[in-house]
Image 1 (cartoon, helix red, strand yellow):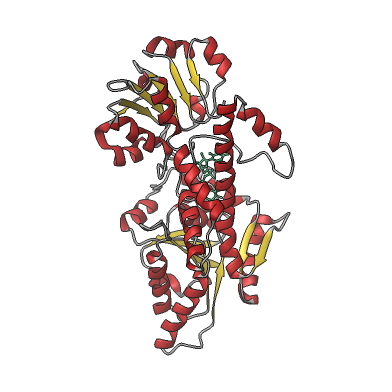
Image 2 (image 1 turned 30 degrees about the vertical axis):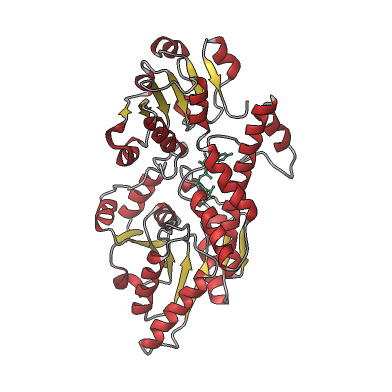
Length: 438
Ligand code: UDX
């Protein structure tokens, strides 16, 4: 089976590499020539554990190709996956121009039967629009009777665990409208799910909706827990105990109940916005999700507020260590990262910021430039600091040498945005500790 994957971002590159790892012949396509040239040399544009070795191995074995020229490979393929970005536009709608560019290229060059699969997260109805656009092009070219199909196959992988998630998914959701599409998608995914075939086939609109609903549900759990955490603080309860108490009810479950300094990344913020917009277009208001967004916006300010409260607003000229810049550990992605918002607020009140992140310093520098000090390690960041703030729970932050920190910090305040430290331990070491919901 030969397939093309268009778009070499997170979803496209991981999907392409993992399909090749399963033995398929995969061509990854992108309009960015530098990126494609880099990939041929084994330069991976994103930080993702395990991805580099899979890309290099499959490229060397000839199962994975890279090109900028979709038309020249299109008619060799049985399937084309559209995995280009759909970022939020200014008003929160999914930006669809890249999807339409690919659609039109396919419509202008297709000469043989093809299955066009949407993997990007797209508004409900997009796959049908793709079908119409391609059909229009075919009609114009006098090829109106050419057989082609569309399918929706949303991707649920998480950054930082993308390869594992892709290779052993909890489930695969596939929206199809023809037997041919169903048969091709079954062939494609059987090797991933040999012992337990968890492909859920459904209609295309439901598959598109499933992706949004899934991310919206997860974001809702987080905002719900952040609201509960803020209330815990005010009534004197411990959110860690509350979380364990509710998570052990199997109807609720224990995952994705961790309060923190807000969700970020390339998916939750944009998808929650997009589903609200999808609903507006059909005259429906997503009231719960509007609240989810609002709670998250507030939560991204919580670390800054705790810092200001501790020092009674008297912060100008103080120095703060920030451990963690990415929106979560194991990634260099700083899109919508709570840490960056925190740093901007600190800079506004004339605080000196000394930041450290194991992977995301270069990405953060693209946005923050030289407004902060980029430290060599956690201790360099904490040197002479008046407070240490931790917005991201990287493993290497979890067990620092508190004796050293006690010596090198000027004032001993720890503001823990992910509840990774034990309040009693830190108090015993002589630190003032502030967590979330404790
Ligand atoms: C998410 C979805 O999990 C994935 O299925 C979808 O395909 C893309 O969006 P990702 O953005 O990579 O994946 O990150 P995820 O691990 O889900 O975390 C998202 C955000 O939620 C992070 O900022 C994280 O810190 C936060 N989070 C997560 C919490 O605050 N509490 C939790 O309990 C879990």
